[in-house]
Length: 145
Image (cartoon, rainbow, N blue to C red; front, side, top):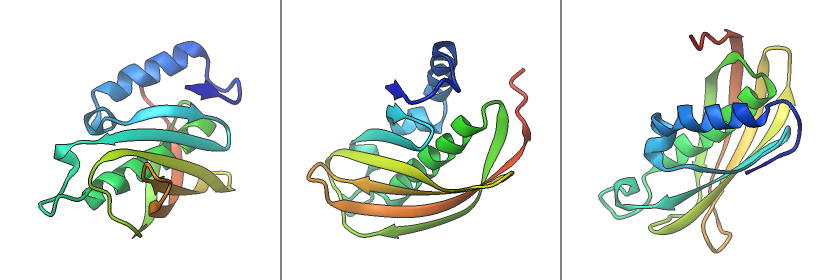
């Protein structure tokens, strides 16, 4: 994982990785590839429990992946604060049944308490499979203790 700013120190990355391991992020098997002030890149190996009964990547998996990385981008911009998804719009453009998918999120708008991000999921061949936009609200300081 690489970093594009000094917002979070190495100890913060380690803490984030440890916290994520036992959450939905960890259950999905998401791997953080890159995190900067402007974007997040994450990857996921599509495995059997990610598939629907038709043998295709379940839409909830790609939706969760995009919601998670877009939210992570806002949390990165606002360390120590609680961030909630207030709107999520998802479009599925191509099916995936196996391999490694790559998700990329970017900020579109940054306000005092509201952020808008976009995210895209690509298959191994670089085909766009899912894209989304999300609005995230900063609601206050996080209570980690």
